[in-house]
Image (cartoon, rainbow, N blue to C red):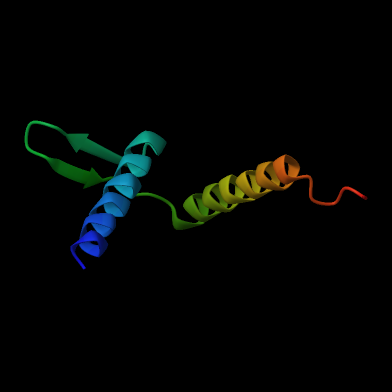
Amino acid sequence: MIWISRFGIYIVALLAGGLALAGYAEFNPETWVLDISPFDVREFTLTAATTVGNALAAVAAWRGWGRRK
């Protein structure tokens, strides 16, 4: 059962890193504080939808979906 909590911590850390890389948050390594900046929910949703859509299209192209056999 401890692997579930460890996996959850990894997911939260991955999301925090993604927010920092996208410019929606700032991480201070000296104090280990993650400051989430104010952001526009509509812009964030559009960016997330575009990113997920492009990722799904890349997976589809890689797997060859839609190709006739």
